[in-house]
Image (cartoon, rainbow, N blue to C red; front, side, top):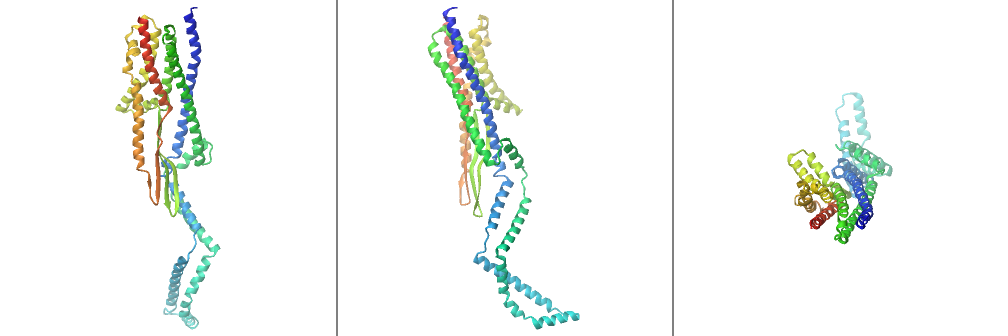
Length: 429
């Protein structure tokens, strides 16, 4: 066995574990990102503006609570007592006058006439009217006793509950929330939000850790190329391993989320009856999609223009890059007959100008900038502050690790294309 063969075997033996590690990291990026998207989707559902700010049930519960607190804390002030006394006086005067009219009506029977005579003998109408203010004060004193106030509050709260029971939302928020609370074993929405936030952040840290490990392996291979570039005997196995690594990066890049669009009202305060109704993190819109997700959505619409765009993205950003990687390996390792195949040569050397993976990266980045700019502009109009209402609208749209990995693949594959050209030139010489 020649020295070159020993070096080749040693190179493959040393780098294969790194390919295994890259594949494992790619799988972890994909699965961990899927878990995080699920949690973020559940978070956006349970905190959707549909089940918060726009929910009749939520508004009803808040208003009933405020009114109930006002009823429980109600006390008569001196001005209210004076007003109440005047009203009671008016009612009592009216009752006395009505009684007087009823007694003075013409009586047709003996019993009625006797009652009328007795009333005029024993009842002094002017004296009764003079005592009306005293009677009114007695009534007010009775009403303001703690026991009487509690009875009145009970009656008011009971009527409030009756009216509240007649008001309900056409959307059932309980079923959505209960399912998610049961799924995450949390007792209420606040506890769910805390748990979901912690899990989401932890998963994002893990995704970045695996992504950076994969990027580190890509950089490691480029560093090795710097040292072995001038050793023709090692270029072929190193190129094959590099192409496999590029394929791993491509698979991870197109299957992992690239952009996360998150528009929300961070905080909204309403001042009603000197009490604040506060809404936190009202999700307006949330989506997290990979390239394959976008292709699937476009084709699933079954609209001609959408299907066409989906197919173009699939061809130029998925099929072409894979075909190029496969063709370069076959060209490098195949016999002379394969090397003269036009289709193979096209994908190995000329498909770069047709494969729009690099254009796709720019398009994704520009879409991110565009989405972020549009959302920032639109959400700015939702932010306001007055005496009775204040709101803070935020745009938390962000690029995801899938974009970084796809960008790394594009750069890495471009470098491999240059290396393949140099290798073939040396072979021709």
